[in-house]
Image (cartoon, rainbow, N blue to C red):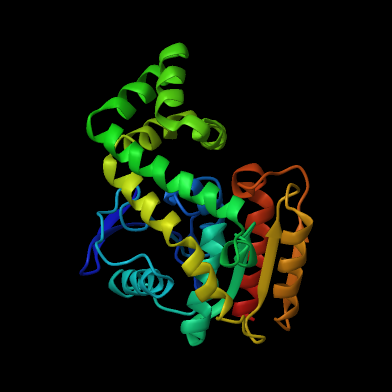
Length: 303
């Protein structure tokens, strides 16, 4: 583990912290990502602030949790983790993709603990709260694929496919992917492409995580709860007194950009910035730009 396990009662969460200066920066990963996705950003932020990343229940090194994956429950688990790890507020919350939904909810439920928010290409609340048949069908396929992945991981097929791919094999891993994922193969290819943006020494850790059935079960539960959680977050308006910076990838759609512009206008210190030459995982593509946005809110909180 890159960090330690912290007991929060319902499970133990993997927690990684670096740096010492206040206020603390809390990094919230995407829906199926782990603390490893902040590999480039976390050490940069540690140069000027205490910075913490973690794995949600069932993902990465964290143990599973039986509680429903509601927005309120996920916020409760993060808050309990920070208390038990003795990380005092106020916090600058940083959320990528689905993590943007969670930091928004945290700020609504506990505004007195939040000094600022950075959303990194956040998930669209409108899209998933009011999803059409096509989008909901895509989400349902993701849930089925995740559950199938849990079965294949339990009998060792995932570990075999990942090991063969790691040593340079192509044909057999591709056949396994097509047989198990069907229409989800392209999504898997995109995910692998993003993982390969991490340093090669991290790849064995990612392979180990996704060789375990619990990771797939956790992803299925989070995907299944996404529409409900998006509707819950829409009912949690952003506060005008909490500084907000929204970073968008160059691949963001016009609908996503318009939604994020409306969020930035809700804060008296709101900004929306579209970065160039980066995809959805922009903290892997342009970590310096993400770090600069975090530093700005940290310095604002200190002032």
